[in-house]
Length: 362
Ligand code: G6P
Image (cartoon, rainbow, N blue to C red):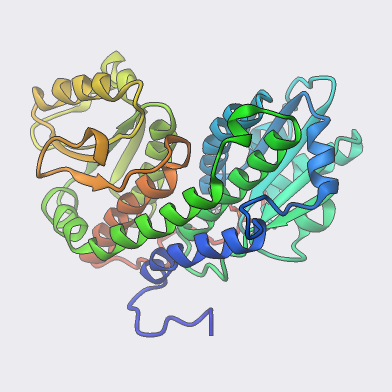
C-alpha cells in the first residue's frame, strides 16, 4: 500500500526515492502520446484571459511557486507574482485588471491559504488549486483543481509534493503558452524534459551515499549553514535551507548568491558549510566568484552543479536538463543532505519537533 513505509527506515527517504515515479505519473496524466498537454480546456481558457497570475502558498509550496513564476513568465509571457498566503490574507495584493489566482497546497487544508481563497471568491476572481489531496477544502472552494498525483506524503518535511508542484506548474505553463501562441512554449519538448527529470532524479538518488558522507562530514556538527544560488537556484536555495533546518535543526539560510556579501557574509567562519547551487548559464561564473568570497573566509564549500558547469571532482554533478526544469534535479541532493543530517544526528526525521504536516490554524 502506498502509505506504508515498506522496508524503509523513514517515510522521508521513501518519498525522496519515489520522485522518478511521480515525474512519470505526471507525464502520463497530463501529456498525450505526442507530448501535447492534456489540461482541462476550461482551465486553460480561464487562465489565458489573465493579464497577471498570482500564486499563493505556504512553506515548501511557496518555494515551488517561486519556481512556477520563472516557468510561467518564460513560457507564457504573463507577469506572475508569488506571495505568502499568510501575508496576502490580510494585506491583499494590488490587483491587475484580469487577475487569476493559483493556490499551491500539498494538503489542500492550510488555513492561511484558505483565508486568501475566501477573499478571492468574495471578489469573484477565478482560481485554481494545485493539490495532492482530491476533495480537499482548497480544491472544493477554488474554481478549478489540478491534482499533483504524488501519492500520500506522510513525512512532515515535504519532498515529492514539491517536485510534483513544479512539474504540474510546468504542464500548465506549456498548455497556456501554446494557447497564447508563445514560441518558447510551442518549441518546448516537455515530454522529453519530464523523462530527463525522472532519469536524472533516479541517478541522483542512486548516488545518495555521497550525500550521506557530505552530511556527516560538514553538516551534523555544524550549528549553521548556508545555501546560495541565483535565478531558479535562488528559489531552490530557499527550499533547500528550509528542508535542512526543519529536519536537522541546523540553522540554515538560503541566499541569492551575491546578496551574501551585503551583510550576511560576516557570519562566515572557519568551517561554516556553504552549499552553492549552479545551473543558471547566465550567472554561473558570477556564482563561482561568490564561492571564492566565502572560501577565502574559511567556509567549507559544497557545490551542486549542472554537468555543463562542473569543474571539480568534489562537485555534486547534476545531469543536464533545461534550465527552467532544473529545480527538479537540483533539489534532490538537498533533500538527501537534509535527510542524512537529521538521521545521523539521531533525530526524529519524519516528525520534527514543533511541526505539523498540515497547519489548519492561522
Ligand atoms: C506545513 C508543513 C509544510 C508545508 C506547509 C504548507 O507547515 O509542515 O511542509 O509546506 O504546511 O502546506 P500545504 O499542504 O499547504 O502545501
